[in-house]
Length: 401
Image (cartoon, rainbow, N blue to C red):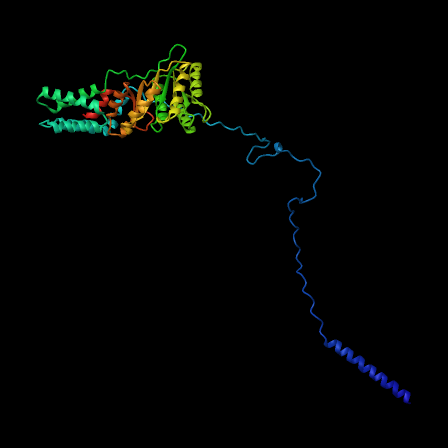
């Protein structure tokens, strides 16, 4: 009996324990399941550098010749482009030199006629006393005529005015024109000697100090000669400035003249020698040699200029040595002229920038100083503004109409 009761108690305890376990299990909530990724199918990754988009196929590769170019007809092949050389500059036809100064007279008179008009005004006074003659002298000296030529001109004017007596404006103009013309030595031969001899061209050497416009003058002179029907060779003997050789070559190309150059800082005498040789070989009419801008105070450079002259004369006679002077420098140009005349035999003078100064009397002074004529004058920056010097046209520009 006791055994039966113990068994029932054990069974009841077991049932209670089992029921509690079931209830506890039902009350505990299971944790939420982790969120699942959306069911999206990703595109295949792009191939990166060095990868192939797909397994290479066993087929032959086409060469570049077999590939059609965009916009080209089918079957067109790739043709290598041939570089196109730049076209040569067009050769210009320079303005004829005949009467060039007459055409440029208006430009000259704008800067020069103050001298002529000033003299005419003074000479027109009713009484020409000593004070008036001193004013006339001052006017001439201010225009850089020079002391000696001024004294000579005033003496002649005094004598002619005294003999003339009554002075009308027309008579004074004629009188002044005649005296100024005489002061310019109209008997000078002002032609630039460039005639070729048998087997050799005419040779012209252009000299002067820095800044006077030698290289530009050489280029403009080439135009003058080409306009007169001559063939020209240019010698770039200014080897101290590469820009000078480039500038001269540009001038030459514009009129079809060949330019002989040398290495930068090379021997100027060698370039001068080669230039004359080139002129002989090609049968040119004229060789123009542009020398370096020597400072007249540098003895070594002046000696080198003498060397250039001697080297040139070994091949052909030197027909002209043209000294280029800046008209605006006035009396300082005379100092330069003296030194150059001691080194080379100056045969003619080129006065540049004459349109930019009222001191046209430098024409008289420099001729008197060197005993050689002014042959060419520069009246502007234009290519054809270099004109043969004509005393009559120059005086007419001085005193006006």
